[in-house]
Amino acid sequence: MQSTKFQKRLFGTNGVRGIVGKDLTPERVLTIGQALGTMRKGCIAVGRDTRTSGETLVKAVKSGLLASGCNVVDCGILPTPALQYLIKEQFDGGAMITASHNPPEYNGVKIIEADGTEMGDEETLKLEQLIFEPSFSPESWKCTGHESNAPYLIRKYIQAIVHQFPDKVGSEISVVVDPGSGPACLTTPQILTDMGCRVLSINGIMDGTFPGRLPEPSSDGLKELAELVVSSGAAFGVAHDGDADRAVFIDEKGRFVEENREFALIAQHICHRKKGTLVTPVSTSLIVEIVVKNEGCTITYTPVGSIYVARTMRSLLENGNEVVFGGEGNGGLIFPDHQFCRDGGMTAAMMVFILASTGKKLSTLLSALPNRSMIKDKISTSCGTQVLEFLKKAYSHDSLDLTDGVKILRKNSWALVRASGTEPIIRIIIDGDTHDHAQVFYNELMDHISKITDR
Ligand code: MG
Image 1 (cartoon, rainbow, N blue to C red):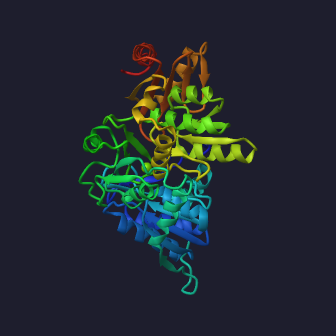
Image 2: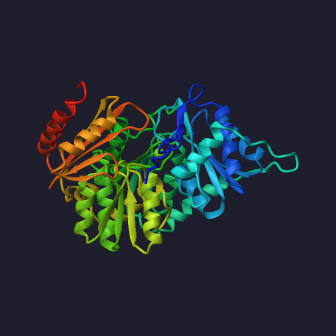
Image 3: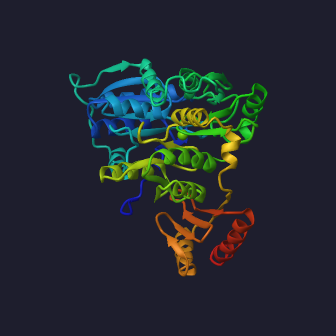
């Protein structure tokens, strides 16, 4: 699935990212706008997260699009999945100015296709060719595009989520929302309020300096949220990353919910009601496969990256398969009845629905899931490809999955080793039924790897 012929130079699995003024300049973003406007015609939607550099960069991308003859609708500040939803409904493509979970000094550009999915590898390579070997010329004075502003469209996204659930289903539920000063300030509190919930917010005022916590919703950064959940007696807390395509949770006892367990809980609920396949990358914990199979559903694995999950879900559906759910073990979940991209607002709403329909506490639901233990590590090495080839031979008697890197499959555990495409490192994940089993597998793997690296 991943292109082997050409390597992308600028775009990673989640668009272009960089430190503003150093790796990412307005000139570069202008060129991206011109290249996109050359490839895609019609009416293009743009949006941004709350970063301080967003205003400058959104003007640059709009200028490039307008100069190449596209009409532009500026949807203002909104979550990435909100822009993706609006594009799917009524635009010919789009560009989101965001650096997702990266620190405040970063920003980036994510290109969205007319169907609301992120641009795939093949089209991104064409876009990069236009960026690095620009051959476009601006349209004449009679053919430049027209810009309009439509910040009110965000309401359509909010309503689309609310209408997925029974009216006022959350009327018995209190939730604390932590949008992290990002664009979900405009959406998740409103979605949950419209579902009937009592909503409290923390870090609920948009601020591109992120004064309350960093855009990555790590357990360390969510201590204040956890305290507020406990002191207010809320059913749960929910926090988003900087562009709100991910959602992570705090249970009613103030404990951070590991994201694979969150995924498993929601998967269990969906697979209990609807039969089909769930799509996820090879890096997701076995906990998801276990609960999905217990509910009589199947699982399909993809390379790491939400775009591969989304596109696999679509192609399975187009080939007549029933696809019930998808996502990654980082709180980025895809609900195919809603749209084919990760959606943090939808994930928060689904958690309300699960608690309302089961009548159980979040901690009770989580404690019924199987236990798993994950070890993650990364090693600096310039010989990533050799490490992978070596492991393929060393573990040739084990069951291997080569979808992305080398995944060694055993009865109750697996190990995944992947070489980074952009940095001289290899990433290692071990998933075991107990911490001891995961540790033994990790030690064994590291013995092998140390034979050909200097670690
Ligand atoms: Mg994100």
